[in-house]
Amino acid sequence: MSIDALLETPSLGPNDYASSQEVRWCPGCGDYAILAQMKKTLANLGLPREKTVFLSGIGCSSRFPYYMNTYGMHSIHGRAPAIATGVKISRPDLSVWVITGDGDGLSIGTNHLIHAIRRNVDINIILFNNRIYGLTKGQYSPTTPLGHPTKSNPYGSLDNPLHALSLAIGCEATFVARSIDVYQKHLGMVLERAAAHKGTSFVEIYQNCVVFYDGAWDYATDRESKFETILELEHGKPLIFGKNRDKGIRFVGVEPQVVTLGNGVSESDLIIHNERAEQPTLAYFLSRMHHPEFPEPIGVFRDVARPTFDELMDARHRELLAKRGGPRDLEQLFHEGETWTVEGDEAAQPGE
Image (tube, rainbow, N blue to C red; front, side, top):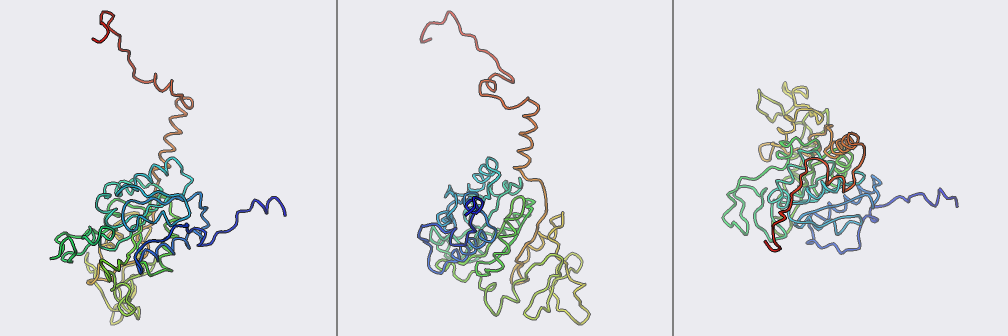
């Protein structure tokens, strides 16, 4: 066998990305489907395990790094985006993934989330949204619908829910997408698109918690209803949905309207999806379309190019090194810039 053949990296399958740890989620949890698709995605992309990092905060979803045969860290509540930023800046060659939930990422972690997004750090943020706190046994979360009863608020939540994609787009996210745990083919497409994007990729996944909020997304997954409640986005294509593909969305002035094709209404009257629009106006509008008034969009909302934070940081570092004639040693750093000397008092006695 030749040396080249010996050195050739063997292709990895999904099972090669599975760790030896026992997966400990509740039977039927949507996290299993996401885990399975993530392993398939990494295999399809051929990402080396030693070049891949999964970072998480606290929550059911945040057990994810244990189950991946890659580098990873189960970090502290809501701080995974900050840790991921440090990892990417120090090791730009790594593929960095943040796994978070609606509780972890949109409550205590919101501040870190929005700043990672606005900086456009080259990381992939995957937010599992099950509309409930699962790990801590069923309290209402930032995405729980208004009026929904939970263990911590049995008479119904009084909090207006936060919409994850609207928040991300408001932070000028360069890649925004949504999928659903049981839509395996669609989820795979979204994850591959996210991995290929240069900059912050923000993906929301509708995920079912079978114990504390079973059926939260039934309208989006039911075989009969999903055609009327979900709209799959395609770049350059009109916003069409329905079991017979006979319904669409158009603007009447500045207001959106659901219409039926025919009787004077054609595809040319409908809104054309443009995920590459520089201005995020259309993407934000799509993020505000919610069931039952409108079908909810899934797919890629926005995918635009912008310099990444880690690229800008590296360029700044190289520029400063060039200006200063190369790297400084520690002694030089201590004595450059504004320094001063504090003279001792010769008359002072020991202990004074």
